[in-house]
Length: 200
Image 1 (cartoon, helix red, strand yellow):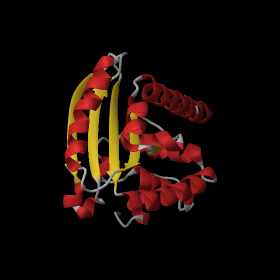
Image 2 (cartoon, one colour):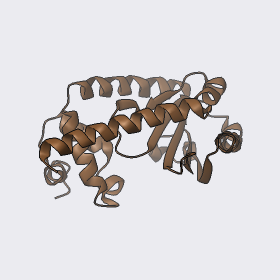
Image 3 (cartoon, one colour):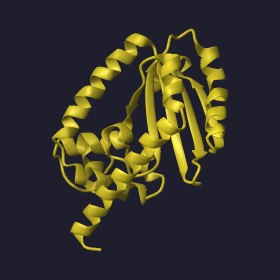
Image 4 (spheres, one colour):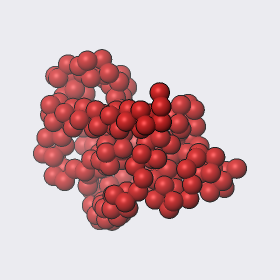
């Protein structure tokens, strides 16, 4: 496959995954369920930035710190909603990161499931203290604006290359590292990114 063909294929896959993610959130009723419970829900991460390289969705929402018990029980509602739409829940992980502020605070659910076609998905739901959520929304808006002027083809290439290295992606280099690296126009290889981050 030539360079131009590889670029076109990465763009095609990103668009396909974006459309799948949007359809899944709406058709499963999950987005409506979250909005009914928390009001404001933001699709963030690669699904929100239209930079997907695999089936992974990040959702942020506000939630008061004293709602840990209801947030824990909410996992059962999610599982039931997925099952009702023919999806198979593989595993789910709950975290109360108010007890681990080094992780940013808030509550989270990490849901791994297969959609109705059998395709695997990872869904990360994060609930933040309302003021913290507003601060994070402002930061997210700034990142989206910066990404609007960045080389999106380079971002997709680096994300694909990082994922091909197994645990390298997320363990060594994260999506956010790649975004900052490309926004800053530091270079165009993972090796340069490692040097920039002080890993090499």
